[in-house]
Amino acid sequence: MKRVFLAACAAAVASVTVVGCTTAAAGPVSEADAARVDAAQADTAATERAVTDAEQVLVDKARELLIEDCMAAEGFRYRPVPVAGVEERQGSGYVLDDVGWAREHGYGTELQDRLVAILQDDTNNAYANALPKAERLRYSKALDGDASADMLTAELPMGGAIQTPADSCVAHAKGELYGDFAAWFQAEKVAANLVGLYADDLVADERFETVLAAWSECMRERGHDYPDPPAIREDLPRLTDGLSDEKALDVEQELAVAEAICATRETSLVSTTRDLESEYRGRLWQYRDDVITYQRLQHAAVEQAREILAAEPAPSN
Amino acid sequence: MRKISILLATLGLVVTGALFPVASAQASAACDTAWNAATPGRFGAFEDIHCAGVLGSDADDDPNWADSVGSFQGSDNDKASSLLHKGNSGLAVRVWSDANYRGNFGCITKDEKYVSDLHDNYLTGGTDKFRAWDSISSHEWVSEAYCYGAFLS
Image 1 (spheres, rainbow over the protein chains, first blue to last red):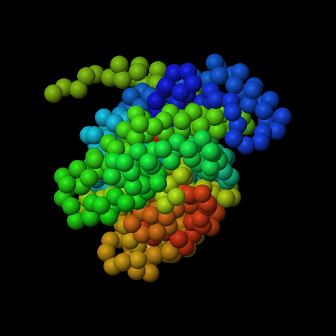
Image 2 (cartoon, chains in turn orange, red):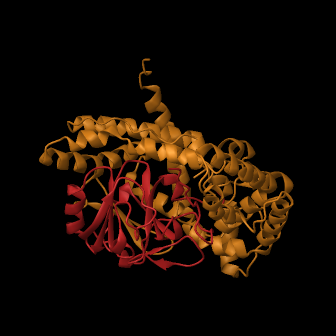
């Protein structure tokens, strides 16, 4: 997930801002709801910006170091797992918003494949698998917790709940970073799962339909006849079938650059969608507290991570 | 072989993709046992709830559970009723309702360990919900960032 802060009314690409800057409502809003939205908007100053991808990278790296320490205290070797970099966290949204990134990575297929391969090639697995059975079990429970023991439960915005072990080295590491693992788990599961509550309404919004039509026309003029960005992604397997990796990347890059240019320079698809997303998220006043908690804990984690990484001896080459 | 991930589902609307439970998740002693015994780095699927009746496990992707290639084959298609994730930090397994990473999808992350009963879950990815049980036809490992998010990015 790309987390970018755009000042003032641009509000944020993937931020979990509580309110938007546009006030026009596409659908009817009750007086009570409107009052709550107004109250939420008044709290804008109380919310923080979403953390950037670069900041999240720091948090993830610090988490791995904390897990390493925790596992060492349990008597196990744990090598910090590589974390996704800034570039690898881009490109997963509805439409590409960075022409430079698109020019280099296309739709990011190679980038993601490489990241997954690195993460799958985790030497910790070989280490764990080489342990005697009883120790392997203890390793597993120390690292990831025991699901038959104490579990945390988070209620999800679209219904239901999700659980995670309350006690493990992963939980401990996140607790150190975020200050309160239970609060983080609840807030993060809510904030990261709000999109399903408004995506349908957003794409049915007349303002979105208008700008999407302009984007599609821009693409058609460039020789790419697609109704929307997801249609390109659906078509990629056909377009790249049988091609070498190099040729396939060429195909991706051409389309991705056109998509991003049409979305950012030739039309206002990206900026309009940002504003709409901010507006629709702003209506979800009932999740405001979780979102504020999510942002507050994220920033606390960034500060913690900076301290942890600063205390870490520089790697020797 | 180059793998093309379809980043968004057919209708391409919702980027988020937790396996949405429709009821409260229940801890499962049987899935605990299965998870503890599972090989680190692998994803597993089961024909029955509570991690019973192994369909297969995989450290890689499988774009088609109905074909004769990969860890899941033939009759494994549209059979899974429970899942477990014993993969690596930062990786989620995205399961899809159709082959070749199409249709509706859901994600299971390492934090969640397992889904003991897919009857309590649905897949998303479009404008509608889709049952999660007896529906999975392909799976892929993705970075967790591809399972959560906002609409735009």
